[in-house]
Length: 126
Image (tube, rainbow, N blue to C red; front, top):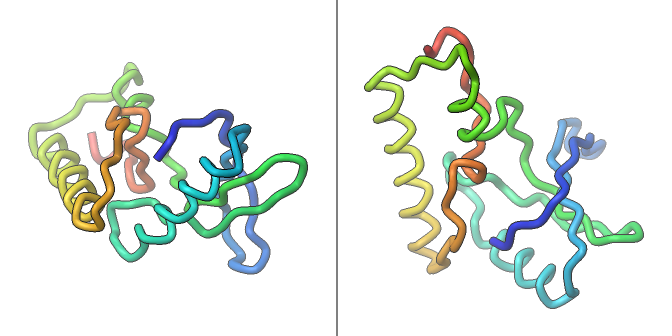
C-alpha cells in the first residue's frame, strides 16, 4: 500500500470501536487502488483490515486500530528489552502476514518497522 501521512485516531460508530484514519491527499486513482487492494486483504490476523473509505474534504481510509503503535516506536523505547523468543514471534507474524499478502498476489512495496503495527505489546512482554 502507498504511504501517506498523517494518521489519526477516530471512532467508528457503527462498529463501536476505535479506528485508524489515514488522510489521503493523493489522486482518486491512487485512493481507489489502495481501497481495492485493502478489500482483498481481509481475514488474516497479521494484516490490518481496511474498513472503508470516506470522503469529507479529503479521502479518508478507515483501518483497524492497533493501540500499541508500530515496531519502530517500540524499538526506540528506552525500556524495551526484547527477548529472543519475542523477536522470533515478531518475525513469524510479519512473515505470516507477508505470505498472505503475496498469496493475493500483492507486493507490499514498503516493508519497514514503521509499517508493522501491533495491539498486544505490553510491559510484561519484555
